[in-house]
Amino acid sequence: MLERRTGEFPSLLIKETETCDAEKFEAGEAALSLSLYLNGQETQEIRSVTHLLDGLMIRDPKRRSISRVLYGEEIVAARTGDQIYVLSHKSGKDVQICPQMTYGKNSVESAALNTSFFIHQAYEKTQKLLPETHIAPIDLRVGSLVSYEQQVPGRRGSILYSTYDVDNAYYVPQEKSIIFLPHSKKRSGSFAKFWQIPTVANHEYGHHIFASLSPRGVRAGLEGCFGHDHDLIDSAEGRVGTRTARDLETALNEGFSDLFAFYSLLPRERSIQGIPELIMTREIHSPFFNNFQMKTFSEEALLDFFSPKSETRIQTHYAIKHSFGAIFAHRANELLESFTLSDERKLYVLLSWVKEYGKNWSRFQSYEPRTMLDEMLRLFVTTTLGEVKKSLNAETCPKVIRFYPRFEELLDECRL
Ligand SMILES: [Zn+2]
Image (tube, rainbow, N blue to C red; front, top):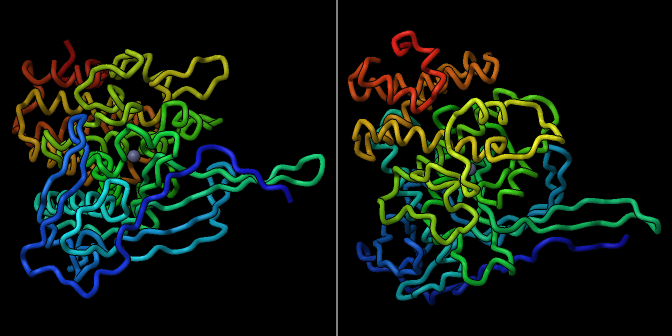
């Protein structure tokens, strides 16, 4: 059989040290330099990582936030429609680090340290706000080499096409794993690595929190979170029929995870500069997508998102799940900001919203998707007003209608 490689080639992460000659970190003083990319600049930050070391292994020694951090994993898979079949899987190894080392930004160790540092921090913030909620520990898999195979009949026998999956990160709910793929050789040059940008790790962890708060509500699958727009259209919008409640949930889950990352990081840690694909479109504060379409739940946006896919219709941002989620993220943040809540309280409202959704999952899923959107956003308003101890009135109605224009008709208290 002929074999052909297509697509981009991965630039592999480097394992800088295999062993450290029995050296040990002095108890209580493990501080290492994280190689980050913040506000459009490469930066080295010394952070204490004692709480993330189990001997020389990077992982939460109490296994509360992270059970393992692995590298060197190799997966060969095949894709048929929405389904993914794993053809072969070589497991990864635990990431170990050595004292007195500074790790380069393309190293396994650096990717593992950065991402586990911010994920653990997000875990602590969430657990503090929702102490009664069980959040299972995750596996973090960095630099996984994933390729997809496809057999295509040719004139002289079949041809096996093999394509690497690169330049992305995703959450696998059934394995409670966050995977950071390598970057492509093509992208590797001047751009930031996804593991250098805390927003990427915290967005993925946001999906885990969504799954923890609404366990029945998360679809299995490998859908990358940070590809180009056209990739998103290809992968997310390969739909033929009409939208389902699950599609809407996926879109809101994306918006939730963008907001989760935003509120669980400090302002100086949460810029997404360095990922040109995401500028404007995935920036919470930006009222526009990168093609200058407005982030609003207009009738046009609802029509584009909920209509069956049509060949004649031009694909707009509104038809893409990640972008539809970005409308929610922008508008929800505007609503919360209008009540001048702190980031911690905003995070609490956001978490409480999904928790309530998770409790009433069957009821929400039974709605027709457009009604489900009405009800999900109504729940968000109720949760927000509950937090600020206000009701629908002349002060709050204009804010609520800016969030979702259909509330002008849907909410009796806000009808003129
Ligand atoms: Zn995502």
